[in-house]
Length: 162
Length: 416
Image (cartoon, rainbow over all chains, first blue to last red; front, side):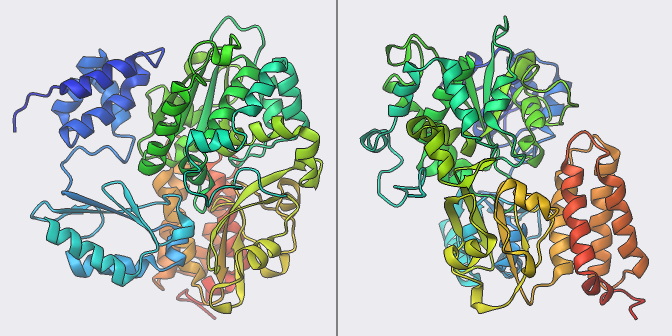
């Protein structure tokens, strides 16, 4: 992979638009980090340096903000990012059994990525869908009312897509 | 009639602008534009619309703290960082009823003299933010945002701002820090956001649900809204979230004199598997628990306070007999240990100490002294920090350990 980082024309247009929405450049930082993560897959030092340069902000300030937020990742995630809610409502409705399925099917623990780069598994806190617990997100798409069976099926389906 | 926001929720297309307008949407805005801004604010004050994010502070009063003749711009920041465990009403509003929020934003901004609104949406809300974006584009395209809205001479811009994963950004000053591009570490108050908020300017920060009720209040008038829930200080209706061990978890829009018993048994269908009720987390995991003999309480801000707990964000979680309370305590403690922003020592250290002690007891390796140590740490965390995240673990943990002490004692190595 090249060390060069540059927004595609589409991303550049979004970037220019968001600069007009805030009274300070710093306020555009988090939205720009999102653009960067979507464009580059993850935010390593090179990507952060590019964001810092584009916003004319010190690298230290960019790193300080970026590392505070759990959704920004400095390393590449798997093709399928599975985030399982393990907070109260999902726990009351059986998320421990779902965690067991991850262990059995993928052999992954919290924040691990499979060797083939297919899956990253993360245990997350409440995603505000407690009436449909237990739930998870796969690449940002919500899946509700999980049972061990439905979740096993979901993972096997993703495996076959890979 | 008890439903305002959720009237049409099960009808297809209810999230679209056409549907909304066909069912009377944006008519409150036209009515508001015929009123003076201060009359709009007065109406919201009279409706005693109390903040639905957790604090219960009256919205109209909050608005009135913003200086009228400020030479700086003023901002409205809508808090859509819904992260309090057990709360999922704002998600529903964004996904199905975003135009109620958008119309509320315009009316509220008009009342306070604001020309730019930011909607801060939690980063994990991929699907809700898409729905909101679509609704906002629709509203812009029909002239509900931008310059000279509906020929009123009033201008308003609205920007959706996504967070990136941090519970603390739901705290209003943490949210403002985050909006400004910094880590979401809460600020000392005063100054309050009404004077120095976003970008050093006067700012109103309100929860999604609070703003979404504004059009109904203007449409009906404060008097009628108040009468929907017969308590003067807890007027109208609100959205209750109920989850955990109930047959029909969901969001229920109900008058504020609804009792917890009615919520559980009449609306949510009773306890899953017809088990006995063990305890209730009434307003999100930051609120002290209630026992089964306390469920005749009315679910409003003042009545719950009398029982030493809070309505919070109305994220009611029901726990049935047979649940391991020590493990539940660990699940709760882990959350706060994970989400503490770390700037205040009592919270940064205390939340993790409690989590480690509960884990130790859960593993059967704790002692009676560890139980007292948890209570001691709780006492030393409360009221010692910039924001209330510390109290948000200390209060419920103290209530859980006190009310279920026997379950903790049964797990310790020096059990009697």
